[in-house]
Structures are given as structure tokens and as C-alpha cells.
Image (cartoon, rainbow, N blue to C red; front, side, top):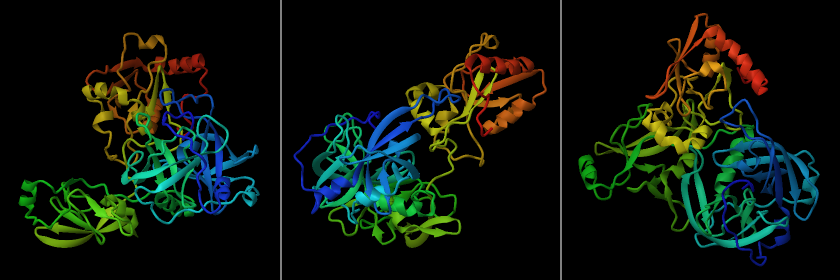
Amino acid sequence: MMQRLALYVFVSFLALPALGQDASSDRQSVVKIFSTVRAPNLFQPWTRPAASEASGSGVIIEGNRILTNAHVVNYARRILVQPNQSSDKYEANVVAIARGIDLALLELEDESFFDEYPPATLSDELPGIGSTVTALGYPLGGEALSITEGIVSRIEHTGYKGSTLGLRIQVDVALNPGNSGGPVFMDGSVIGLVFSGIPSAENIGYVIPTDEVRMFLEDVEDGSYEGNPRFFGRLQTAENDAVRSKLGLTRDQTGLIVTEADDEGVLERWDVIDAIGPYDIDNRGMADVPNADDLRLNFSYFVPKLATETEGGWSVPMTVLRGGESVTLDVPVMPERDLLIVPLDGAYPSYLIHGPMVFMPAYQELMQQASRAALVLASDDSPLIERMTDVADEPDEQLVIVPAPFFPHRLTKGYEVGIVPVLESVNGERIRNLKHLAELLDSIEDEFTEFVFAGSSNETLVFRTDELREATEDVLDDGGIRSDRSDDL
């Protein structure tokens, strides 16, 4: 993880353990990564903050590539790679990135680097619980390669970032900022990549297993990243005696209950999913993992393993109990839903300055930063809360917000708006997205322009149209702002 991230954890420095048959070769495959980052400012979208420096770790893999965490190189304007026991730094570029699962793939401009520094071997198997593992990387506090040891304490299929699900290994080697992207070895092979720790817990760190790494590498072979298919239906456990009686389930019939029919008309309400492919699902949604001793994972782990491409997307075989009968179905799955509030995914925010206000679409990253005001937004009936996880009603639908206070100007006399208010309409016309707003404001010929915001406490703002347009020029001049809108508008 980057040294500027607040994922602080504790690491004990141990005597150099044996990493494999050739420990020096393993160490030579680990690199330090320097990033010059210019992240977006979601509350002042017309600006880009000064560049900051950060560092992390990475590992060389086959094909003259370097694997690291997405957050190590996200929004990086320049990336340098420094090999072990060397002062040389090599220019690198991101060729693939998956921010949800936190993986990124780098290539170097000078490929002669790989003549001297060998790739690490990626393990084909998951480590067993209790296995001894060794983490290599460049954590905070020194320039030399750090080598620490611990055990695997848990393996689970869980949430990563946003709607992304994936396999995760928990180790008792806590990890410092700077360790992110570094490899974790067992018996000379990489079993995963460090990606985070828990600030409030001692000796707990998390590793992205090579199981996820291989799916990422296969996904990006065509030059783009789609993500692992997953199941988005609404389910509940089949543990309660009353609901089991209602459905006529016998003691040996287990699974997850469908509580809402899917849009494709494949699953029906009260179906009980009792198997995914050949794997039986218990009443908590868990299934045995083949070739792994005593490892049970949530059924969602098997979705990308069993998914096959169809004409309309992806599907996975499931067996359901429906009205006492067993039915085999091909259930639609997908990497992502078309959410109303989308992530920036490495882009900079769109914006529009008009008069004393700046407008911007709502992004997931802004919602994360505004989480402290969630209670205030909820009490105001803000669509940001009500529609936080909604799918867009139309392909181009956006929630348009005002992310910042008014620019200082006489036109705002007596007006107030709440925290990140959502714009509903202008002169009675509902706003579909930011582009629609820009086109509408550019074309208004009425004497007055009226802005109506969602929520119970936001005022309606009325301005003289000519004065509003003149105020835009005043605001740009006063703030030294280059343009009243982002390039995409």
C-alpha cells in the first residue's frame, strides 16, 4: 500500500527466513514502486491538486511485466520502478488496472531490465490454514527490502471495493504502508499480493491470492478489463423453521431462498438455490471447495469459475427447488450493474460552472467522502441516500449535484442550499444528466432561470438569466479558472 494511505498496521522484523530453494532469486523479483500522483478534488472539480509522491511494492511476473496494487499507481502521472539492491529507477506505464480487486499490471519502457531480474513463480494452489508464509516489500521506515513471516489465519470470499467480490487471504503478518503490491511467498512460489491491513487490529493483514491474480491476467489479455461475473439477486438463508415449513423443505434440503424474481424471468420468488454447478449449497450459502482441506466458501466464489459467455452476457448453472421439484437453470450473471452513481474509475470528474454555482455528477468516490454527513442527507430525503445503490432508469441518467458552496458573488444574497444538494429541474424541465444541464442553460431565453433542488430543506434559487451568465465570467476571472466546463462538455 502507498505510504500516504492510512492503512497502518504493525510488522515484526524477523531474521531472514528461507523463501525457497533460491531465496536470492525470490528477492530479486521484488521491486519498489514510486508514483507521482495527481488525484481529483471532488469538492472543487475544476481544480487538480498539486502532485504528491507515494511508494509501494511490486513483483516481476512472466511476460516482462510487473504486478502491483491498483491503489499504488492510481492517478499516477509518473511511475518509476527500482529493483532490489540497486539505485537505478526505470520508467513504467500501467497497461491494465482493476480498481475493484486492487490489481494493476505495469510494463517498463526499457525491457533490458528483465535480462537481469527474473520473474517470480505464481502458485497454482491456495495455501492451507496455518501455513507459514513470508511477505517481501518496502514498508515505511527504510530503503532496504523487508522480509517478514507469519501464518495464514483465514481464507474467505468477501467484498473488496464497490460491488467487487473476491477471494481474500488473512495473515497474521501485519503490514506497513509501502508493503502494498509486494508478494507473499510460500515454498518459493507467490501465493498472493499484499493489499491492506486493519489500523485498529494488531497482526492482521490481507492478501489477494493468486487465484484472483490469474483471473485478472486472463481477463486483460484482450487489452481491456471487464471484471468477474457475479450474481446480483436478492437472497436469504434457509435456516428459519417457519420459512422452511412454508416451502416444504425436508431436513436434507438446503440452500438460499430467492426473495425477488430476477429481471430475466429465470429465477422466481421462493425458489431455493440448493446447488451451483456440482457444488451443494448449505443453509448459510456455503459450499465445499474441491482440492482444499476443510475449506468452505460462499457460493459466490464459484460464480466466475462456472460462468460461461452467452449471446447476452454470462450465465452460470444452478439447481433450484421450486414447488417441491428440482429444476436446473442457466442463471444470468454480470460483472457490474448499470448503477446510477458510478465510480470515476481513474477519470477526473466532469463539471459545469454557471453563475455562482458548480455542478457535477454524483460519483461513488464522493459518496465515500460524504459518508460522515449520511444522517443529515437521509433526514433531508436526499436522493444521494435514497438512490445510492439504484440501477439507472435510463442509459445516460445521472444525479447532478452542487458539490461546493457558492462562489462569492452578490447574486447569492439571501440564498442557502444544504450539503451536496441534488438538482431536480431548471425552469420546470427535469435534469437528466450534466450534459443536458449544460445544453439547457446555454439555450435559455427566459428572463429568469429557476433551479429546484431535491430534499425537504433546499431553497429554490431564482436568478435573472442575463445576470447569471455575466456572473459566470466574474467567477472565472476571480478564481483564475481556465474554463467554465470540463472538456467532455
